[in-house]
Image (cartoon, rainbow, N blue to C red; front, side, top):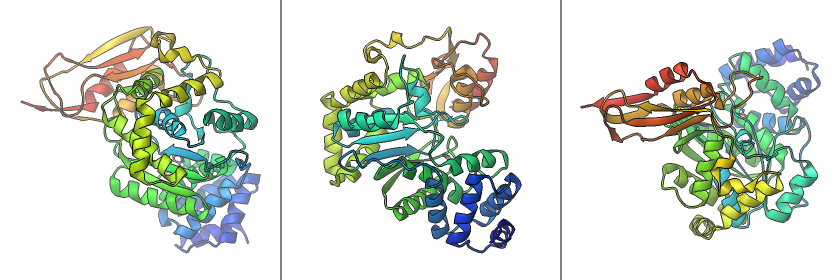
Amino acid sequence: MNIIEIIEKKRDGYPLSDEEIKFFVRGVTDGSIPDYQISSLLMAIVLNSMDDNETAVLTYEMAHSGYVQDLSMIPGLKADKHSTGGVGDKTSLVCVPVAAACGVPVAKLSGRGLGHTGGTIDKLESIPGFSADVSMYDFIKNVNEIGLCISASTAELAPADKKLYALRDVTGTVQSIPLIASSIMSKKIATGSDCIILDVKAGCGAFMKNEAEAKALADAMIKAGRAAGKKVSAVISDMNVPLGTNIGNSIEVIEAIEALKCRSESHFYDTCKKLASEMVSLSLDIDIKDAQSRCEKALESGAALEKFEKMISRQGGNSKVIEDYSLFKQPRYSYAYRAPVSGKISNIDALLCGKASCLLGAGRLDKASVLDLSAGITLKASKGDTVKKGDILACLYSDKSDISDTLHLLENSYSFEEK
Ligand code: URA
């Protein structure tokens, strides 16, 4: 077997055998296949796709290209949750403690922000003292003792994906359902949880731009996960407008705490409850209606907030932030963005808002960027609201004194139906 024949086979539209995929992943992991041949095969996959079996084998092989966590020391079915990435998406900060309060052991590995999309680990690190670098021993201990742990992904998990993802990023080969599905699911499988709940985002602020594409991705991920013996379910959620009101790191944590205090009425709150109910239903093997009422109780009784508080303390963070938001780092400047015209807000473009938040300092513009964890945007008006010229549409927070580039993006992100 050699890599040139494998590339030619995929180039000509034929499915690869299990052995050929194994050979490829082994060569990626041990460095024996050079980057130009890997990239060539990736492009052939983008153009000619992969069937369900090929995607499942690629996923499994990437998951086993490194260390696969053994969570058998934690009793019960362990749950993990994954979002395909969005703007203002802080759902994990709410649905993980809610599910844990319902008795689901949640062993979650999360990532940092990618492009205009935020990452759970960056958000949690805005809590003073919080550490997401948890040893395997403490990861298991925390889930066993307090029911939940959120830790940063490590270099040993799915190393083949790390190599492939870095190459895809610079060779125009990110946009492929089998490649995205295998990339995400390999990491989830390597994490070791039994149940995986997927939040697949659809819209201009997401990888999948419409619902049909999101459904196809969800379907590919569910099949790849089930082929590896996992219980998997998926929810498709809208990412045309930002989720909730806050986009940034500490301000998203504050919005999540408000939701855990049941002080939220928004679409964001509903999305959290939907995802938490899926986690509870899948992991405890109970009816979704029963799961929903358990989640409501966990929120109303304060049990979910208590879980979040325990997780912060266990991971070295100052849990007093829950009662006193001034303990978060404060931005040096705040600005008001005002309506340029009177009328009804017909759209708030999630992608442009995500990019604007990055420019304020909340996201990385390159690998070396240092985040401003207090930077971001609070939306003061929603899609569908009618506003008058000069009304405040958003508050912007940053350590930067010149934010003209951000204002330009925000101007373009709002559309109005003028009277
Ligand atoms: N997130 C991942 O981890 N991989 C992809 O390919 C896309 C999003």
